[in-house]
Image: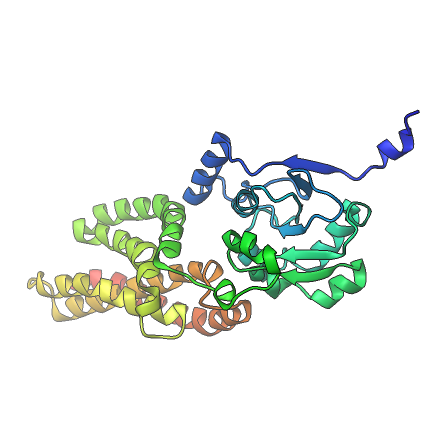
Amino acid sequence: MIDIDSILTAPEIIPTSHHLTTANHWDHFFARMGVKRGEHRVKPGLYSLGRPTPDSPVFVSANYTLSFDALRTVLAGIDSYILVLDTQGINVWCAAGKGTFGTNEIVTRVLSSRIKEIVTHRRLILPQLGAPGVVAHEVKRLTGFLVEYGPVRARDLPAYLKTHQATSEMRRVRFTLRDRLVLIPVEVLHLLLPTILIALVLYFLGGRMAALMPVAVLLASTVVFPILLPWVPTPNFSTKGFILGGLVALPFALSFFLQHPDWSLYRQIGISFGSMLVMSTLTSYISLNFTGSTTFTSRSGVQKEIYKYIPVMAWALGPGIILIIGSVFIH
C-alpha cells in the first residue's frame, strides 16, 4: 500500500549529471559576453549527481550557471549531492562578498531541503572562495552541519576527496592573465553602446580626435587595465586606473597642444590639461568595476577605496570638463 503522506512530504531532490548540453555551452557563452546579466542561474535546492547514498558527500554551490556547471562537471563518477544556494545568479566569490553566499542562506537551504533526512553524516563541503561570507560555527549551531572548506578550484575536488586535506597549492588563490582576459568581453560590451553614442556626439562637435577619446578610455579601462593589473605599481585600483588613463590621455593632450598653433596658449593648455583630467578620471572610475571580480582586494578594501577616491575623482572630473568647455570659447 502506498503511503500518500510520505510522498507528499518527501524532500525534493533534483537530478542532474556531469554532462554539459549544447544549451549549457550557449549559456556560458552569453554569460561571458554579459548578455542578460543576472539571468544565468539554476533553481536553488538540492541536486543529486549519479546515484548518491546517505553516505555521499554534500557540496555547496552558487546558483550561477557557470559555478554550478563547473562543480558538476568535475564530479564525474562521484555520486554526491549538490546544495545550491540562492545567490541571485552571482558567482561564489562575488556572492560571498555581497552576502548572498552566506550563513543565513546556507542555514535556510539546509533546513528547507531537509537534507538531514537524506544523509547520515553532518558535513557540508564549501568552496574556499565562499569563506568570507560564512560563519562556520553559526552554521553548525543552527543546522548541526559542519562546514568544510574545499580547494579554491573545483577541478582539484577529486584529489581533495581522497584525503579531505587540501595541499598548499589547492589553497593558493591565483588570478592569472587568462582569468583576467575572461573578464574583458562582458565589460567591453556593457559600455560599448554609450561609448559609441558619446563618440558620435564628440565627432560632430570636435572632430575625429575628440571622437577617439571615449574609445581610448573604453579600451584602457576594460582591456588594457585587466591585462596590466599586476604590474601597475600602486596598491589600489583607483590610482592604477588614474595612471593608466593619464598615459592613454597624453597623446591626445599633446596633439591638442602641438597641432593647433592657431589656438591661443590658454586654449591649448585648457583643452590639453582638461582632456588629461577627464580621460584619466573616467578610466580610473571604470576600472573600479574589476574590484568585484578579482582576488586583488576584499569587500572592506573596496569600501575604503570607494569612500576615499570617489570624491577625488569628482573633484578632478568637474574642473576637467569646465576647462574643456571654457577653452572652446577662448580664441
